Length: 188
Ligand SMILES: C[S@@+](CC[C@H](N)C(=O)[O-])C[C@H]1O[C@@H](n2cnc3c(N)ncnc32)[C@H](O)[C@@H]1O
Image (cartoon, rainbow, N blue to C red; front, top):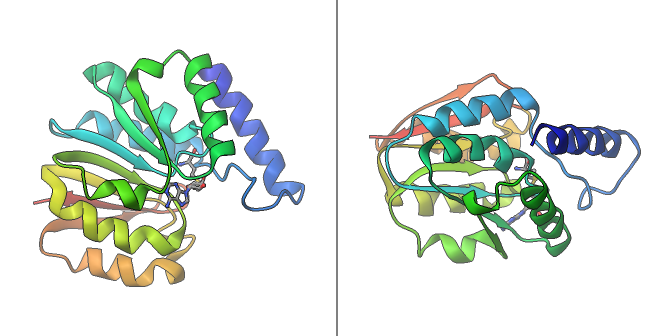
C-alpha cells in the first residue's frame, strides 16, 4: 500500500503543476488528512462506512486501514469511469479489494438507499456537498462521523453547507485545520 500511495502522491503533485485539466487531475487529500481519516474511522461506532469521491483511491487506502483493523468494508462512490479504473488498480495492487466496494456512478443516486452510516468522507464536487449532507445526516447512527474536505480551502463555495452544519443541533461539529480544512460532524 505504501508503494501505491507514494506513486499516487507523485502523480497528484505532477498534475497540480503541469496544467493537467481539472477533470483528469487526481485532486487527492494530503497524507496528514489521510492519517486523520484513518484515526477517526477507527473510532466510529458499528455501522456502514462510505466515501463520496474516490478518484484514484488514495483517501480510500487510508480509510481502509481502519477497515482492516475492524474487519469491515467501505463503500466508495466515483462518477468518472477513468478514475474508477485507476481506483480498481489501486485496490488490487495494494491488496485491499476485500475491504472495498467501489460503486461507479453518481453517489447522490445511491445515498437514499443507505442506512446505519457510521463514517462518511465527503470529497466530491462542492455543488453536491449540501445535498449529500442533507441525505446522510438522518441516516447516521448515534456517534457516527462525517468528515467533509476543503472546509477551509473552499470555504466560500461551501459556506452555506458549513454554516448549516455548524448550526445543526443533530450534530456536534467543528472545522479542523488539517490539510485543506476538514469539517467534522458527530451525530448526537
Ligand atoms: C477531490 S476528488 C476525490 C479525491 C479522493 N477522495 C482522494 O483524496 O484520493 C473528487 C472526486 O469525486 C468525483 N465525483 C464528483 N462528483 C461525484 C458524484 N456525484 N458521485 C461520485 N463521485 C463524484 C470526481 O470524479 C473526483 O474523482
